[in-house]
Image (cartoon, rainbow, N blue to C red; front, side, top):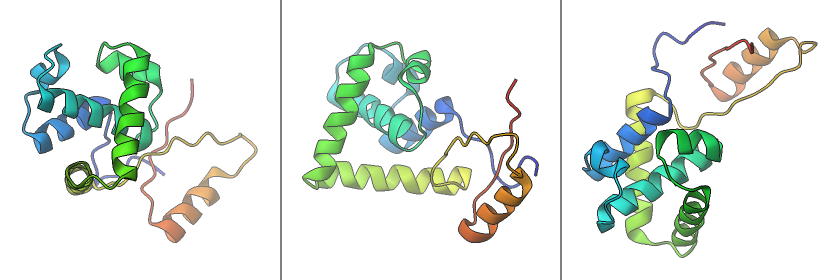
Amino acid sequence: MGKCQKCHIMNLNDLLDAICVVNKQEKDRVLGKNRYKELVFTRQLFYYFAKTYYGATLKEIQEVVKVHHTTILYSVELINNLIYIEDAIVLGRIDRIKAYIKEKYHMDKRVNLYIPFEVNHQELCKMLIERFNCRIVEEVMG
């Protein structure tokens, strides 16, 4: 397996860019300290997507946005609570972000999978592609 030719590999900065585009916010302003409601909401959605869909660690998220880890945890919990009560604004924004990511990056979710050396990774990749139509990008751990 090699790098998928059709898709661009998404990183956390790409994720933030996507969320800024959907929310019609400038990335510089989102990365700032301004507490304007839409900017805060955009940041919260970034933390939620980074943690929930991208599987990023708090440290990885903090490398992109310089905030305390409790801010990230609070934001993820807040968005989850708004989803639980079926807040129409949040659900609509999440759907639009998912659609944008799917269209631009040809992906729904990213999962990091660490495979022991003894596992035949080519067979595993083949099964994932056939069964779930996954896109596989291999990276050898250093």
